Image 1 (cartoon, rainbow, N blue to C red):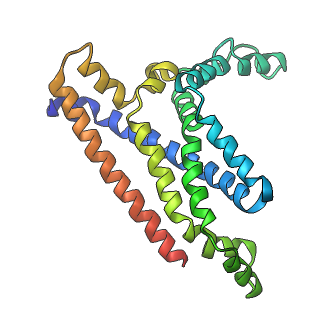
Image 2: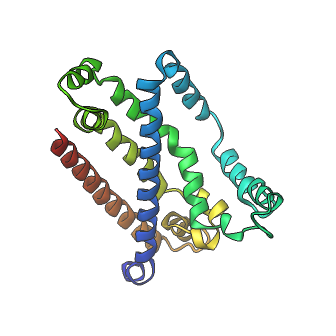
Image 3: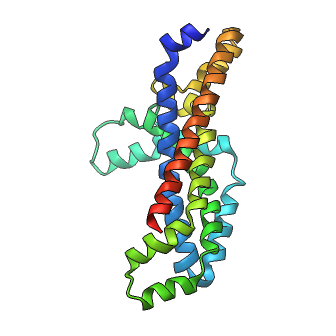
Amino acid sequence: AWQRFITQYWELTLYTLFVGLVAGIICTVLGFVFAYAARFKAGVHGDTLMLATLITLFGGYLVKIYAWKSILGADGLLNQTLMASGLATEPLAFLIYSRGAVIVALVHFLLPFAILPIYVSLEKVDRTLLEAATDLGDGPIRRFLRITLPLSMPGVVSAILIVMIPTVGDFVTPRLVGGKDGVMIANQIQAQFGKASNWPLGAALSVTTMVVVTALAAAVVFILRTFARMMK
């Protein structure tokens, strides 16, 4: 089982980790922008924006995936819009059943889970610190890098881990919108425990994935904490 993993599934494991890391980074960046706007720019409407974020969590996971199939499919909204506007003469096949479609669907579903911890961290940022930095001559960018970002780093770390770890273990999204190009390690684990009935190989894939994800998560936490200390 371990030999088969090394010879056949190592690259798939690395690809899965890459997808998880990319989805985590995208969700964290978008989530930070949204949370920052809700905390510092929206004023009295900040709570309304966060309530809207919570409401999106009530939408079914499969419903969102099938919605993306309807949008990205050959007869979907995006292809029909492109052809109607003259930007495409035929449906773009790469929009669906691809690695990009998997990342888009994962980001859409997991983005609220990145917004919430970042917003909680930003709520703890004392506005008087920002005012003091302004009085001492700091501009918006320097104020953000020296105060806002370091103080919100716990939320950033939580966001990227909350998104990355479930992504690595997801086998539904790659199966429905990924096609053969979007297969991830969780699909192989599910297949080994299911149709193939090869439990030793499935166990080897599961244990190795768990160990590698733990190591990657520890590395992400170390890098982000080091970055936060350098910014202080």
